[in-house]
Length: 254
Length: 366
Image (cartoon, rainbow over all chains, first blue to last red; front, side, top):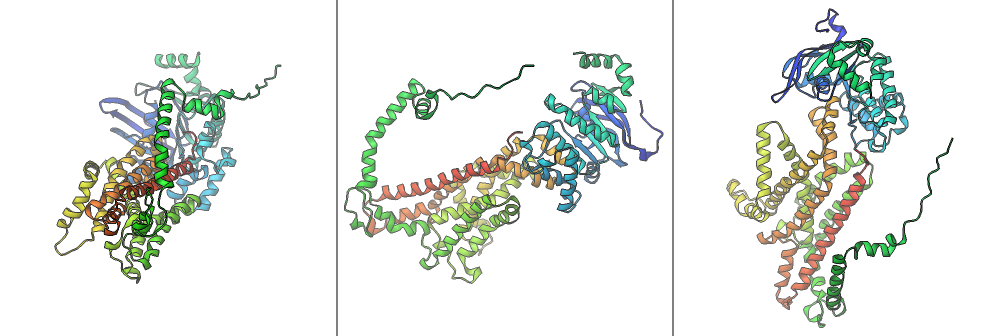
């Protein structure tokens, strides 16, 4: 397990050390240690309630934690609005339920960050938005509203919305779990393309095909702990912990 | 390989659509419903002819004084003779255009903002709408604009009901949102003050608030200052309304999924950007039916002002009824007319509410 690396600090874009989190008295994250290097793709899996979503939501401070330290792109996560906002500008996030803003058109959804957070002029923001809409292959939907799009299209818009902020790190929180089977592939294709371009990615997902294809490391979590961490090849073919074996049997053999 | 051909659509059974279908579904859907339909129809047949006769056939339509009411039916002459007072109170004849101008601006801004593009609406019409109460006061009073000053004692009639209700809701609209934000705040002081304010103005009857405004409020002002009675009433209405609006907004806030906040946060938007760009528009949209309902309530509540001597429409009607030239007992006509005017306005507002809802309903799913 990589608790401490010997790489230069600039190489490690996320450093989580002894992170502990409680909901009231319920201990949801227990001594999490994780270091992510620039350009690395990490897939996090585990049963529901294992803390995997909670862990990645700590990275952009959608969840607070009580103990431990977290450094993102050299910025330490502390109780300071400036630091939190700086980290959030650097980290994009894609949610299970897309969370597009229903009252804004697709183009307005995409322009919101560049205009209000990065203070870019409207024309420039729209050009960026169109660039990323083309990358996720739906530029023709720009003037529609989120409710008029299919789930797969909405999720691609959500990815484009994050990319418009030009993030260094992308977090994916079960991006395909709310999609109809027919739409999963179009979203995964976009994610694979993104991975191939060298984006640093942490994906909470149960798409094992995706994990085998793009992940540098697969992390298995249960009961708030990182149980096992390995390359996809070793993880799937030669799991080291019995809990991992049982989980893999359950999700692969049905 | 077999080809899949969808079946063609067939027409629905005749019994379930058209007039027969409607009658069956709405008037005779069950034995109890059929019985109710028959009873109501019987009552209508008994009552309607006499009512129509009094209202229209034997009614007196033309004339200028009570003596012109010679027939048995309603004396509509009473209403037409007093119509100017009913609508404008004692506002001077030659200055009535100012009242009309304010009413026209109110209607024009609302209708225009429903039709123009979103950008124009947000940048021009909404700010104009928020400034309207102050512009209207300047026009009606006149002294700030170099016009003849018309003291608030002369303002009255139905136009006062409309303008006072509109001016109250326009200010209460943003104020209520601030109270609602305060109530959700993590800062104990802001939360306590907001809850105290909201619960006070929701818990005290509006009549009691009006009395406080007209009797008690002056005690708190420094001695010698004379704050206009209408202004005090306006303040009371704004506070009262903003308490209710805060609760309406609260329902809207609760209906917004946590994911909207998280998405805004993950983009790095600040608290106020998130609140104003993402949350507020959705809260208003969700709350629109309740906002309009609350407004209708406030609008009708303005008739309570007759108790503290503001010459709104109902108290103007009472004044007319006690006029020595019209002592023939025209209460039915007078109150019926007031009811009709209010009903027409409230009904139009609910029509407008559904138009706004359709307009705002841009997301079909989610």
